[in-house]
Length: 335
Image (cartoon, rainbow, N blue to C red; front, side, top):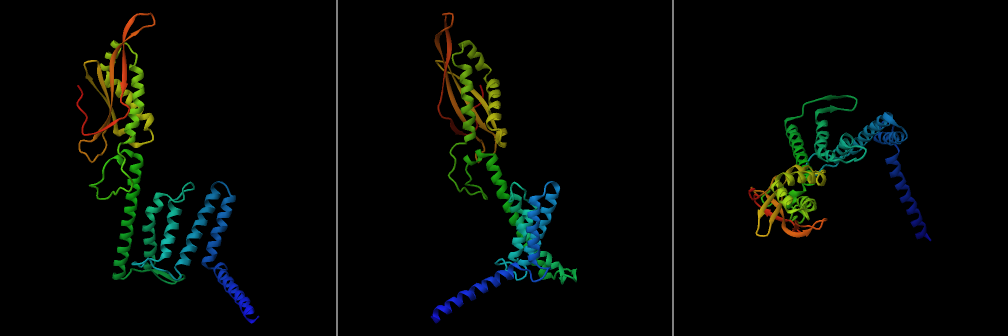
């Protein structure tokens, strides 16, 4: 029985201690405290949710200010330090909130700029108190001691360097999104880029261009009188170039790399007809100094046919390769 009573009293004591700890965190000891700022930020966000127009933005603005002030106050009371630096963990948290407040938006709270400026803002927040001396009510500016200046410069410079590397990552990520054909290249000699996924064997945008260009060319040539086809082939450079630009604009309109693809034909005579090579030429950056291009060959041959009036005529029959071939180097000269 005594053991049971001890257990019951122990549970009550634990609950009482837990309640006291929660109350200490949630209930401000005085009006001027970090809890007050946090509650003001929550209250501001609730009001901004109910408001409309520019009033909503103004209230939300002050909500962010209250949140940043309350967080900074709480995390600097007994600061933990980032290992190897004198930067408080609170400065990192506050820097993140400031960065989100300054560079976030309603659609994407965390944007690339938020992440890029986060280390630098955190370093500046860490450095600011070094230029102030005195208490909250009696503070004045001061020049840090020489040894303090050195560590401030190192911290801020290191954080700015980290921001630059993060920005470089986002730049590279943007390039690969807007220029996906770069993923088909090799980065063995690159100092900065390390491939984490399997290499794309052939640039898909180049394949898409030829796959969508082929049926247009086939439609214009197939079952067309042979004399008209030969005239078409004489003007192939202009015709295929125009069709290629239209296909590129429709197929790659959302990519910035659309200006780095060029379509050209190559026409060669054979014993039985012609070979029409459709070339999708990459003129963008490449590890190969001579670049590369994709080729799809079409064989055009004359065949006998009967016109609607019953006369025998010669028309063209065209057959193209199923797959495009990736060829390293410069395309062959036009004849």
